[in-house]
Length: 102
Image (tube, rainbow, N blue to C red):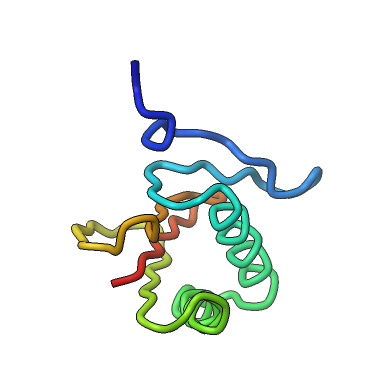
């Protein structure tokens, strides 16, 4: 048996848009969906990865309090410590999103 939260899963972003592939998560399902929705809208508004990450961070800080961290890109390594139930790592297309609270 595997822990469902640790399994890779696919969530529909929209009927026509790319799907989000969750690679690792420790977050409520509602917050997971909000993460994907915020990331998708950020990709619609911005083309530069740094700007996408900044927009996601501002939204998370506003909605869930401060100390959120966001990495967006196509090639990076990471090893982070996060608050329980405040971590998600997923892909939309070729872009990876790493979002966590410390």
